[in-house]
Image (cartoon, rainbow, N blue to C red; front, side):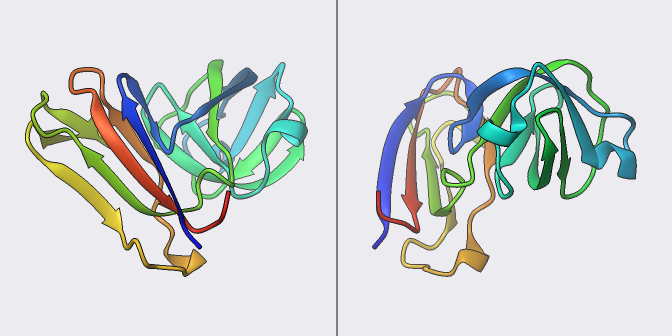
Length: 161
């Protein structure tokens, strides 16, 4: 059975909401090497698991974790577009990323951006199907800037909790 979550987003964050981890993260270049994320003061083995998402807060990009190698090294699917260095670790846990339906409603507010694209001030963004039980069709996490619109977010998870 699916479970719904509702919240108001009043700042730039991810949907589902990100978690602050310990330490900072960096890449080395913007090619295959940048699929490797190195940490300083991080605890990847206890905080992050395969299937979680890493948020590059400098460039507003998200990448899914392919493998956790150690407390200070992990691998993501696909390289980041831009190199980054010593940014605070922000991630979406594997469980929180199991959404099958996402709705961002900012009707009556100012324009909201989703993945860097303006949504408009009286629109609703939807992704996924509320009755979809296929894990293969999960919604991808998004970077949403709700700082000016205080948008309402509705998420439907494909799990009980």
